[in-house]
Length: 129
Image 1: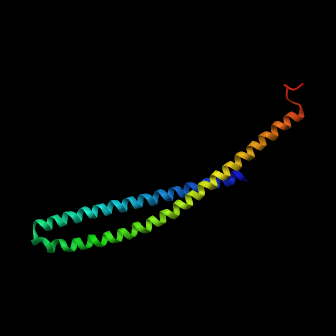
Image 2: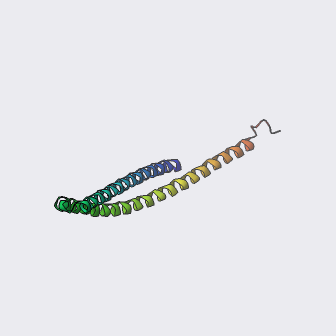
Image 3: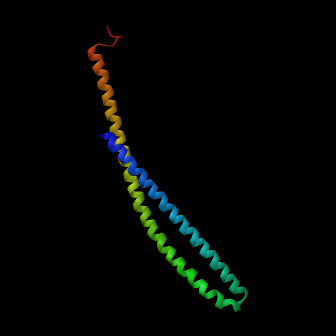
């Protein structure tokens, strides 16, 4: 029974770790996109500084990049909260696996001890007189 619980807890832990990794990758992609937006905005501002006549071409693009940046900030915040919740469940699953593993080891040790005591009590051991 403990072995089944241990197996289920390990599966739960593996799933939680996978979910955590997926969220970490999503956040990394969002941050990379945000860095790309910041670079594009900087390039547009530099181009505007060089030639003021291009304002009409770039103002709309700057506005859309700013809106996308705001949307990404909200998405990063949401994903970070989600990641925290998943990380909490992962830690719980780790403790569950550790507890079941300890219980399983204890049961195995008790069985081995009972086997040794049984063999000694039967006197089947050749080393006893």
